[in-house]
Length: 126
Image 1 (cartoon, rainbow, N blue to C red):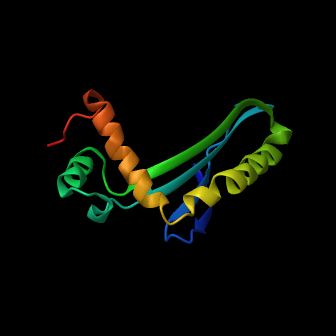
Image 2 (cartoon, rainbow, N blue to C red):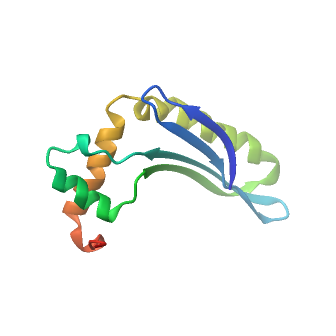
């Protein structure tokens, strides 16, 4: 993966834009845009500190929000245009949401709720 850009968000987070595209054949490629946003796990996001500790046992801090857009079997000459289209789509549709002040807290709490919903997928680490 190649780091293309870092975008500093108004809520203090940083969105990392990665290109994970790869050639499939001589004239065909898979175009992949990956956006990673590390979100710190903070006790202040939780009503009960025990919930924070439980989340910290399962997920390392920072917890990384990841957005992917991928298409296979793209003509090699169209790779760059499609990558730019994927990136523009992210910036138009997703970036405004992840830039909001409430995003870090809601994202971290969604991970806690994920643990509570499917506890067998997340055995305590300890």
